[in-house]
Image (cartoon, rainbow, N blue to C red):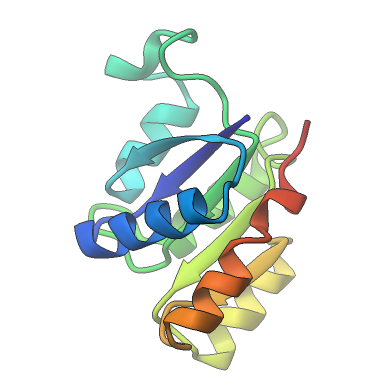
Length: 135
């Protein structure tokens, strides 16, 4: 089981990994830092061409506010791609804006977790994301 974490903020990445490990989420974590890098990973471009070293994820945890290519654009591209649209995506974002939540929901994300809801609630919500992973 592989979870791809798309997060440019190192502190947020470390907190996310910490919560997942503390809650014994049975997965290996892969990390990319920006919107272009996640596309390179999923399309097997450049350093990500090795399928064994960089397996397709069973779940993507996607930040919306990313450098190079915005998470909203990445989400739209992934959901339009016939080969990638079935990978479940959970948004992890500091944005609580209704338009972001609605946008993500309309594109078919399986969950939306706000990073600004406080550590305990964030931890509780994040601990259950494995239920969305595809086999």
